[in-house]
Image 1: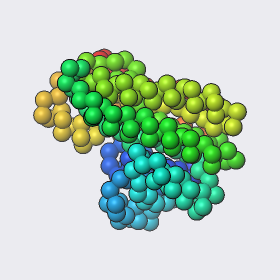
Image 2: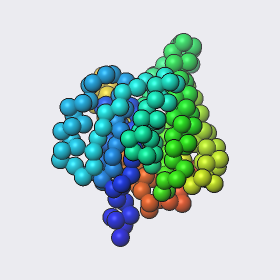
Image 3: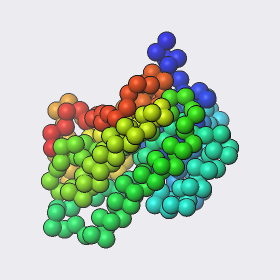
Image 4: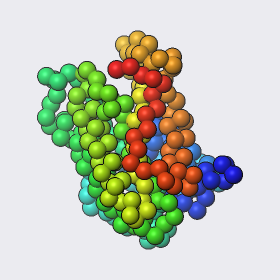
Length: 252
């Protein structure tokens, strides 16, 4: 019964920033569960072959969709194309994001503005657009990928934590506003996730940070993706407005 409830067969999803890292693993999980997933990438044609090959061996399908989340017209065109092809959208996962590491006095305002465009303005625009084509779907779900630093704060990431904190506030407010339409909005706040990018950074001087994880190891991307499956499925149909941490009891 639980496995049936976690099935995503017949559901249509859009995952932003999904060419690599956590986003790519989220796509793999959703497609494996039977969903038709539009895989967003900013770089043209860089995921065509992977989407085709992965779709051939899975229950669902992965369809490349190229646009920049900071491009208002590009986002609108993407959502309209999904509606035209699929009749609507069931799942939106705002995963695309910029991360940086610098002390408060070193933050460049131009870089911070760009971060806000990607981490805050882009998701807001997509939530607006997606909610208009979700209204008649069964248990539609919007998932925003935030961060543990937005919940706890951390030295050396004031810009990044500010942007992801805004995403959490957006999640909670949007959840209340969209609840009458049956649209759920939740956020996931991962800690240190064992992506290639972070593992490379660890080898260059961040390896001691693993000691700050009380459970002793980084979060695996698959764990974040599994949580996305849960929040996308009918089994979580009453879960909304939540910020779910997945960080191995990280201390910041």
